[in-house]
Amino acid sequence: MFKVNVGVSNHHIHLTKEAYEKLFKTPYNVYKELSQKGQFATDKMVTIVGPKGKIERLRFLGPYRKYNQVEVSKSDAFLLGINPPVRQSGDLENSESIRVIGEDGEITLDSSVIIAEAHVHMSLEDLDKYGVKNKEQVLVKVNGNRVAYIRAIIKADETGVLELHIDRDEANALLLEQGSQVEVIKWPLE
Amino acid sequence: MFKVNVGVSNHHIHLTKEAYEKLFKTPYNVYKELSQKGQFATDKMVTIVGPKGKIERLRFLGPYRKYNQVEVSKSDAFLLGINPPVRQSGDLENSESIRVIGEDGEITLDSSVIIAEAHVHMSLEDLDKYGVKNKEQVLVKVNGNRVAYIRAIIKADETGVLELHIDRDEANALLLEQGSQVEVIKWPLE
Image 1 (cartoon, chains in turn blue, red):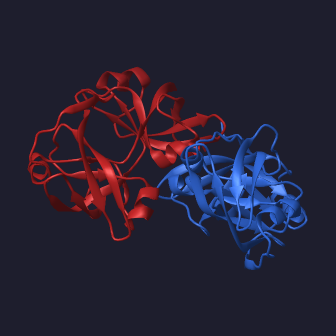
Image 2 (cartoon, helix red, strand yellow):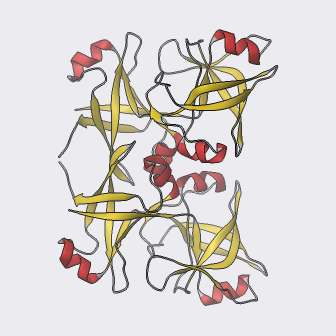
Image 3 (cartoon, helix red, strand yellow):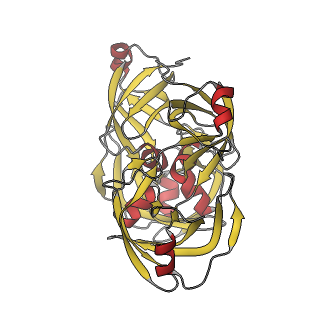
């Protein structure tokens, strides 16, 4: 159907303004603009602590959101000792909980930790251009030193920029990196 | 086509008798029989050292082989700072090199480090039973919280026991674990 570049999402945290202010007394600075319009990495990082281990230097991505959300990979989850569900962003009901430590305080976030489901960001115009529907399932064909087809969900909005988002475990398993090119094809194949 | 159980291969090392004796002065003991007949984990472990990092407690799997081979995942490779190719076992030409430290000595293994390609072990009788050929490409359908089709190679021999072998990165990315069940289907799908 069409080609997309890969964006590899490392573990990160989204915060409400209220939660941020419990963790940090000083304002954040933009560290780097991200590929999706208006989204950015900040210079602020937290430590997350689970029953079995912790992850330091987990970056806060802005701007503020209406919900707190921590995105980790399965290997992170093993290390932390938690069992988060695979979900789309914002779908947090009955997800995992985690303790979060900032520079100036700490909080516990209940039902806030997920493993992100692979998704293809795009604009509303792209939906027409590529003949897909928002939230539709597609297959992503990976054709490198490892060959695979993985399910991903179309995620279109006004500010969307065409890119496949996968997590670090998926990138390592499929030997993909930031900027790799893959092909989106119709679901299902069989 | 047919269903198989998943075996997750953590990083490990195979050694010749000659290499073993440079690393260890005492004989190994069998720690655990593996699913493939005659293969076993031993009680001996080594440390492997790359330009950027090291991995400790990498287990020696017996019996002795005619070649030395270290199997790591892509995330291990990042940690070590090396770039091994994705290969089938024994296909070591122009693969990566690594320093190996045992209890009583150390050696450098040239062209000995690979990332294992997913493969389906089976017996020669299974080839007929399932209508596949040795070294044939197949697709493995993963149908859990993540859905994917990954390429694997049929690997049949006299002592083969039906099982899909994948590495730790693949297991984490696909949310599979030791004993998970998946389906083997014909290649290609398109």
